[in-house]
Image (cartoon, rainbow, N blue to C red; front, side, top):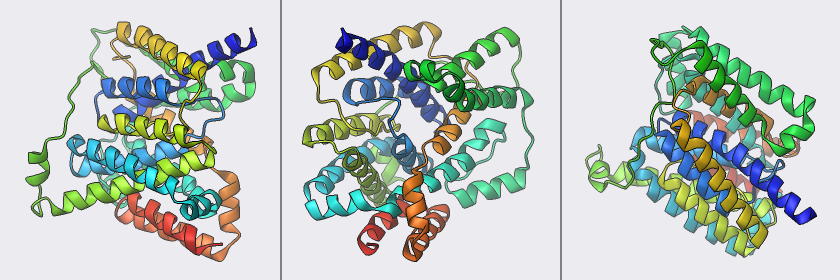
Length: 374
């Protein structure tokens, strides 16, 4: 009976976390919401998700793919995902690398960079500013030139999400262990938006919108970019390597076995086709696999009749990511890194280079610093 109860709890929790998280990742990356649903389905079946799951690796890879999508387009994302899956297998198979990565406080401290960068990027969606930029520096410049002209309706919804995600885990601990706080948050704001703004009303704030599906890698798009395709190809390779480092680090930290790595890598590759990574340890037990299938069925049943929450304010999705970034800080790793001069230097260099160029550069620097810092 206990096993059945645990499987039911696992099923419900997976559904309640992956659906709002993956929808938020999709729409805040400028991708169709249907991509988010497909990613959530892949993650439900292939990954082990629980209230203790660390979401910072997923958010870090999201930042890497966000740059690729902005710089090249979603046509390049499948190549990044495949490269990442291959490189994660290489990392896991080499014992010295595996050992160094598991002990790396510098790499763990990148969760701080992730929270900062997520906040900078998706504040654009939270406030409805209309800013643009591929890098943190570019986005901040855009904010400075445009100024902050908030849409108060969107801010209301986003602030409700923030309050719910922060207070519910404290006030309703049992409830949020069964159904995740992000799910409560988006359901509340979704229903509130339906009540306050009828469908025939002119809306001045962004909503998720109707589903759309376009996949595939158009090599002609890559070849037509400046640099005869050399720069975009290098961007894809470096971003793929960085994603692979995060994939490998996530499984190493969770002490997963080889089967877990293959499952997690498969989920990463599948999810990357749609630009939204699902990074966690993989399912290896039959009951977890069955719970994943049941969870996927629940998400389809919930999402499709509501047209993938077409009326959900994008501001709500943005705040889901902002709060998740700060709630998933690797505090022990950050404290350990800040106690060591090289750790501080490594983190600052990673943040600075990532802000100027791309988060992939910061991940690779963190990887290198893992071998320098003892």
